[in-house]
Image (tube, rainbow, N blue to C red):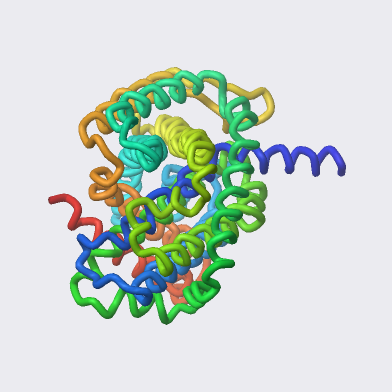
Length: 421
């Protein structure tokens, strides 16, 4: 029993170091972009409350309820992700040719979009962290891109050592990061406790409905808060369902909420802090330590989608959707922990191209989201087929379980389509 408890604790720590980096570094840019004047929503205390509330309820509905509670139940022999879901959905509709074609096309589209996420996530995460150097002084501005590329290069080189080794190094860093998120948030909330009103859903509803077309546009920024939810599911084969759930409810979710509310409290008192509300949460003496910690945390963020891409690729090979390629087993204990050299270095080339091409996290944020929301929409569609045909739930129950999430995903996805231009 003790050995089992130790194993779960070790897996939970490693999961923190791999699974939650992407969603855990969203506070670096999510609220800042949501409140961007470019969306056309008038600035003011109510707007800040509305934005913080919209992010809270997005995390609650999309991550806590949809992914952690519902979608994580759909594992294919311990594996998760869009390809595992596709395999389950294919089995469920094997005797329905028309549904089978629809399921296969949707699954492949979702997988392709996940690869897009695996390129964009490391780029935006690392860039946004390194940009913190220019908050204190503009001297560092010319070095932001070269530093970001250097950090990313180190990350991709690390992959060959395996998920367990990477997770063992990054897990303690992730714990420190989430504790720092919570502490910074509490520090600001204590100075403006009125921000706790953002927990009421009516502020979120006002924010996303009362500004006409601008309310629709701003959804494309709110979704930045939950990028990484799909990686959470894709990485299930590396760690298992229980450690991922324990890490989310026990540390990640509370820390994220406290930090977003803290940023809201700061912006309510000091509207000019919108230039970089995350780093301005902390006292001046903590700026450079936080930049260093944020950079380490964004390495974890990139790790989340990379390990998910490895898992997805192996499953796609097994299902016959990709040609055979070298798959390196990096753990003698966990079958799901793998490394695929071809995928690793293809992603590296694309990530560096994206960093060089976009040049800054705000430019990337303006394009980021279509891959994420597209994959989420496909996940919900496939989950319906698994629940209804595979698990044998009635049509009304299956629609009830997925219908609300489908509407939410469709709203975010359609808003993301505006980013194509």
